[in-house]
Image (cartoon, rainbow, N blue to C red; front, side):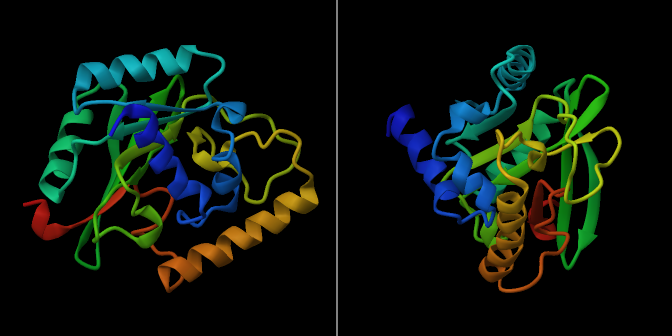
Amino acid sequence: MNMIMLKKEQTEFYRTKKAGCIFAAFVAKNPSKYGWHQEIVDADTGQVNSIIEQAIDNQSISTLSLIFPSIQNATDLVALIDQVVKSNLIFIEQDVLFEGYRCLGLRVQINESKSWVSGFGPFEFLPKTRQSPFTELTFRVKPRPDYKWFMKPPISGVIHLADMDMKGLQKRTFTKWWNASIKNTKKILGHSPNLKSAAKTTYAIPESYCS
């Protein structure tokens, strides 16, 4: 599969609302308009570092997705995490045992702030909203815009995907999509979200794979 088709298939996961988020489904129809950039990469610390640094400096990029097609099983995923945290920009802030899973929260240092990383991949042990065709790490690379209103009070020093600028979306529509996202996520998961599917958790991996 060539890179264009690979990116298209991964984007389709979001566009068809399988991630639960209605905002992501909308943005996935025209990612570049919203500064969402995808890169296909190897599990190489130097390459990952370089791409992140370039994205931080590029004013047209607000959100970066690193797609790792070679990461196809749990062993690969654990090795990937071990590799990327060797970067001077990525670190593990959260490592919590929950219902037999290690819930790992990776963060990317963006100047004075830390950006929460969302992880996806073709792994049956992940929450349904994280089961995408290919392994992917997604995060914002720009500070949170100075919004006049918000659905939840922002956490000081924290950046996450929900901070994306929706380009003039009316408050009424925003609120409607917010509520629809909560409903859709719960429907896909089959239950209310928990730590395994929370935004602050990058990957929830069965403890048996992490020994």
